[in-house]
Image (cartoon, rainbow, N blue to C red; front, top):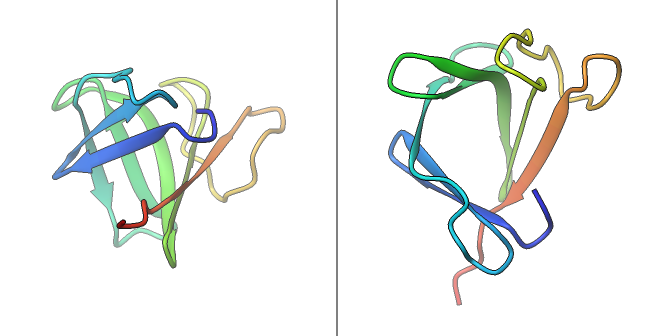
Length: 98
């Protein structure tokens, strides 16, 4: 995702927008497991089918999450990106109110 692109979370769904503000994805479901360590997130294709397994953490006004390159990838254990497992790390900043 490019700098300036953004994601809107609404309940248990998310939607991605590009830098120009154009919608790139429809509303997609996700499931959180906040009691796990690290906290877990599953991005879902529908209400039951897992598309990506990831982890997440909130730090001040940032949401950091990471996952592997495809649905068969194991859930990451930490927030180190890259490597042979091609782990992807994203850091989102809360949009400042104007």
